[in-house]
Image (tube, rainbow, N blue to C red; front, side, top):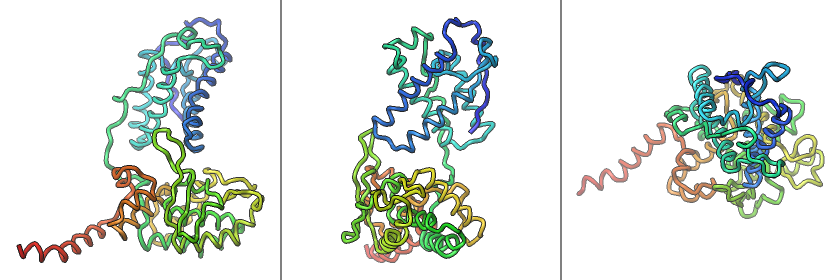
Length: 380
């Protein structure tokens, strides 16, 4: 992702030059790494760590400021410069305006970017020292700092149907599976990776696991005799750490998993020695990046084939998880507490965002309600 080159209100050439840029950059990286390490200590997923690292590294590298002392006459922004009182806030306002008005990014995307910056700056204010310097305060070396991202900077929430709200209901989901098995897989020379990706897709659509939970499954996590599938990598709350959770593991998913374990997984390097259920072609546990690329390739094939399934351009793993929740709720509306447990949710409000039935579902509900309760109400 590229970022606008936003100039400082003033040049930094007037600042003391006794500190070399290489030393400043080393301090910048040390502070940033200190913040990123909190993702590890809070037991966040590797995906969360990598996503925040990529964004923050790219954001600072993309914010170019004038510096006459630098050989190029300009250089990247540094953390304490982004937190300079008044000037830092002006920069954030310009960045937010650029995202919304010029780039026309979605509200949720803008909110995510601002949230990552705000969390970094909050960390720096809570721990305002340069790691590895013997406890030297940032303000003593580089001047005053302040939080440049305020709550007022976040764009107001709007209700719009985003790609991630798309679900495959009923027959559509079965059509999606069939297309992969009968059309997509036979057209590829390397069928083992496609069969692996298909198996992961079935787990997401039939068991409701998150992508990160799927990639961390081990062979010991499948309980065929009890119709249960276990994740030991369930999402915690407020840094509580990963949680063990079991979800339903019904016949259709079991058949797919048995075939994968018997016929497909042994084709991957290191399969006998590894505990990971899903392996890469190099014999390591599959990465989230590989999962993302695999699903995107399949989704684009569905879109190009025009088979009657209108997938959005950014169809992802979370769409399959939401499809599971929606399909289960449409079939079993009286078992919402079971669904909450299987999804790993603690609040109904969270679960509600995952259930996206179409108009026909509500029309059917009205019809059934009228048949059952209509006569009883008129008798009174």
